[in-house]
Amino acid sequence: MAISDINEYAHLTDADVEAFGVELDALRRRIESELGERDVKYLRRTIIGQRVLEVAGRLALLGSNRKSLWLAGTAALSVAKIIENMELGHNVMHGQWDWMNDPEIHSTSWEWDMVCASPHWKHSHNYIHHKYTNVLDMDHDVGYKVLRVTRDQQWRPKNLLQPLQNLILAATFEWGIALHDLDLEGIIKGTRPRDEGIPELKLFLAKAARQLGKDYVLFPAASGLAQRSPKGAATALGANLTANLVRNVWAYAVIFCGHFPDGAEKFTADTLEDETQGQWYLRQMLGTANFDAGPALAFMSGNLCYQIEHHLYPDLPSNRLAEVSVAVRELCEKYDLPYNTDSFTMQYLRTLRTINKLALPDSFLSDTVDDAPETTSERRFDALGERAPGLRTALARMKDRGLSRALRTRRL
Image (tube, rainbow, N blue to C red):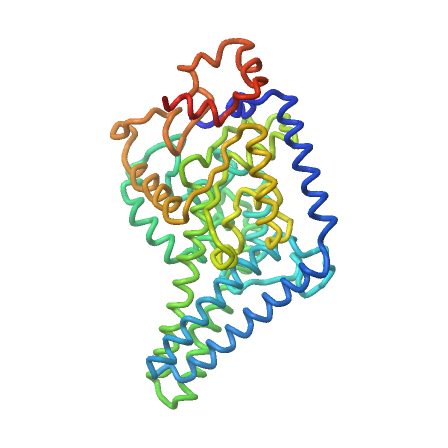
């Protein structure tokens, strides 16, 4: 089952965890004190570049009957949508740029190019997901209420369709995110107050109507008029569908690589009882994963290749996460904690393996509920005798002993 005692799992004493938290607090203060004109220029260049790409793509699609213009326009529009979604929308609405006090680039005013209304996303993501990261039955992002990603989730016959559901979720990811916070089932069944649910449903429908009208009516119609051809409208419509599909699949892949590969741990609600700041940091670190990326891949992922650092500091500007990661790695070495990162391909393949194998009942699986790549607990170390009273604390105080060392020892 999931981790219920995070200190024990991490092989750290209470004092160690609090010292770990103090060092991470100090790192935050240092980065915040350095924010300034360099960061502002980065953001404004990103906004200008994204808008230029989108305009260029839209203009190219006015001649969408020509294959070269269709390809160029679709590519430019796809990249523009990815940048707007990942590096701008996600990060601005996290409050990463609120310190600029610019009313047009602020978490309270930004509305992104997706069918999900920003207030709904900020509630389900900024509040629920980032506060209760990977806590079972509290963080709804654990499987997105669709996929079984840990053995702590009971297997049901519908999970047999999980490989297909995963493909559908990837292709329609913006719709999955949009419906994530609405609880339509609760509104229909009456388990959610209608005076709360109906206004949110209306907001979603209004946002979805604007997005559908823009991408699938207005701009295709403009292309059709420019080319004086119904075929021009149809090809532009296809281009918009393709751009949204590319953005959806990319966002899905980046987010899943940060949350569901091996080593992204899950937790029980017991970990929240009297949780200290240091333990919160530790849960964020153990519950997320990075993937290796150069500057281009980092930018196109909204710097969510640094998912660990993002979860430690969700409201720090994304362009600072690369330098933050250097300090976080050093802290992991100091406290003998694993730093979960690998190539983008390997992190996704491990995620895909988890999704596909957990489509099957547990009786078909070989690992235990406490010692599987996707589901672990502090009980995975029972064979090492580390559950004996007082022994864990003594071992944790040894400079050459911690979670990373325990994991290596267990594999021997």
